[in-house]
Image (cartoon, rainbow, N blue to C red; front, side):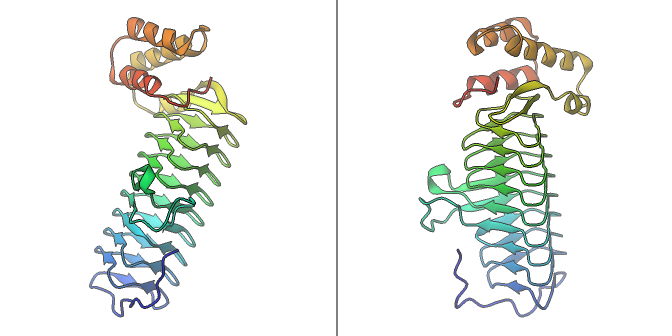
Length: 273
């Protein structure tokens, strides 16, 4: 944990910033316009808060952490805490959070580790609900939803528009493709391809994320291609290599097809099936 001994706190809020008298904001912290820091919140000396960031009661933002504009961090969340990794020895690693995120009560997000690249990243417009944990060296995309009590181990990659049901979890180094959906309580130990729905302990594919596709504004023809890729990969009793060959031969080239294929080719843990 960061040692605050001997450090001075800011005695007067900069112009355009509100700091509650019971908050502790340490010298060195950089505060954007319109920042609001609630009672008993703590902001460490290496923290950067963008414009209009709001910290709730007792929220703690420490470490080398950057929080983008219009992000809200609710009561008693701990953001930028040390990695829960025995190899971590206090190295100068960081957490970078984008704009317009909502980080709810009791959420915990760690900075990175040297062995994992030194950085944990959160994109823009994500909703991270109560008691969720995002471990060191995770990389979360944009517009994702983590329901209550979602736990992601170290080095997890989550692409855009992924939805996690409550009390679900991801094993170290797992990857979640764009617009995937993870059912409540699922325990994921292999990669989840884009657009797919998984559920269960040692989660398995249970279908397409149909709701997510409907909300995507993709043309009907493109959604039809995604459904055909799903059928080839999961319904034709093919190896992943054979399925890839058929997808590249039979499905018209598009951004979605290329990202789907690239995801499968780059999987190191194997995919949920």
